Image 1 (cartoon, one colour):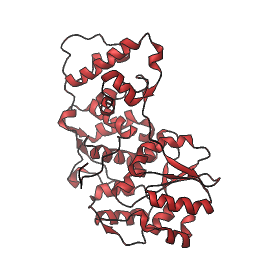
Image 2 (cartoon, rainbow, N blue to C red):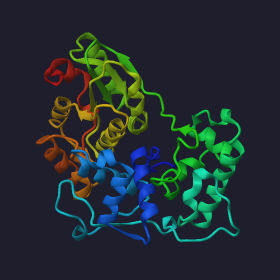
Image 3 (cartoon, one colour):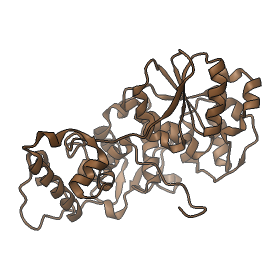
Length: 353
């Protein structure tokens, strides 16, 4: 990474990958309408699409896909609705992702797992990837031991001789609903570890974005934990992937998050919350009293955040914190969580409630 370049993005979340795959399989042209967006969302993620916060979930996922350049959001306010958070009336897919029918050079006898490929609209590149999977299904059909689940990159190397190929494919049309699944390939995403320590016997896990604030809160809560059972180090955007590790912790009925008040700091828990819900975990909720203390500090300059994106990011916070955070982002300002330092948190106990 060169000096001044942005940090690398974390892997696409499972929910965003599912939505992307469903969109690409349905897209017949570059512009995708709202109706197709909703149809793809419902097909790929029926639980989230029918949930209480479906609008926020869809908006969060669309911005994640835009961050990964898997779609382009409208730049004109005329192409956004008036809901909260706003949703686009249409999006555009990059030209390279549009599926155009292109038959294989010679007839292919697809394995039963890939029957859908006979009628699917596939590019030449997609056909080559699917042929590799077809060979794996064929060669492993009489070898049950090869269907013992192994991590994603290990399986990817076995099938493609490229450990990162499946990372790229799972957000594409081959993994749309009714097509390939990770279960069929006997593989799974291996989430990164989540550093955590038990401080009490309560029912709450507190996740802290940055290392120094994590150390401060860990030390202070070790002496007086209240409802807190575990304090975990989110490690910035790594938490978007490591959140599924929370299923390994017992006695947790509430998950709170405290991070920076900027675009990344608010995107992390919102996206992680969608993954948590998919794993049967409680939603990730804001540690509101810590954020209230943070908003009492003087902000520093940061990149401007567009109004529609700021609405999506701050929807995770309750009012009036969401309004204050929205104004902060759209004014080109941020607040680092380190502003609430050990001295303040030792003296002001209001955050413990």
